Image 1 (cartoon, rainbow, N blue to C red):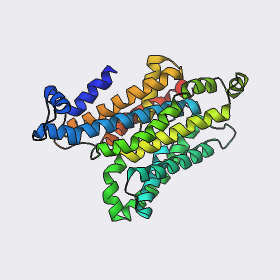
Image 2 (image 1 turned 120 degrees about the vertical axis):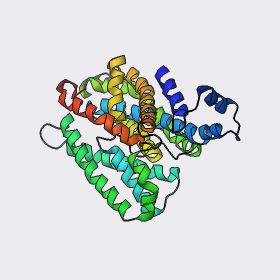
Image 3 (image 1 turned 60 degrees about the vertical axis):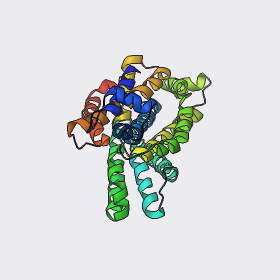
Length: 320
């Protein structure tokens, strides 16, 4: 929590124009619209920080649930194609149906996330070895590449969609406002409520289907609840900030180092660590190329790719 508070403060204070912590406090508690620094904090940095908190929490929780559900340490909403599917359907909604509001985006994002997740898992279960971690990672990468190429083709063929999507597609917290956060909050709350019982359910599933059934757990219902939570959280986060990769992959591993394998502890820990990591990446993107900035999706991809390679090579981490 301390790290999350620190990075939230840095997100408000650090940028093209550094702002003193005292000024940040005054802007939050005693807002003066005529003060340029107060205006920057209230209209630009505060919405960006709130969006980062919401999106990070959603991606971290979804990543932890997905890894527990598939018993695959390489599972991630980005790697398994969930984010790419949500992005494709969101682009289709904008390009073909003229959707302009987040509440419209979300339903398309949900549909795309669910469809691609089913496709990736179906491909990964083909063959005698069923859904091994490497097969799921490879099928997710292949489907993500195919879906991403379709998304790019649609955007390049639609100038209006391209103008509206170019920053969103790389994953960004910039240019959002608190109205979007308010629209996204009910969906994220629904996903979080579904995630609450998932810690206990995933602990049962980790023992194997036969043991879980013997303990009285309804395996099908447990998987459905966990999958619905992942789709809602990932779909909303993607609609809100674009497809941001690797947060859902790295954070659950960090959480397990602190809490052990108990999902009742891993899930809340991931929900706190992920927004801290996302805000840290966003601040880093502002500092590295100041006075310009790197979008947060670019920074998380650069930081996350080595982690993914490390996990692929650690065979003892390949299954949970």
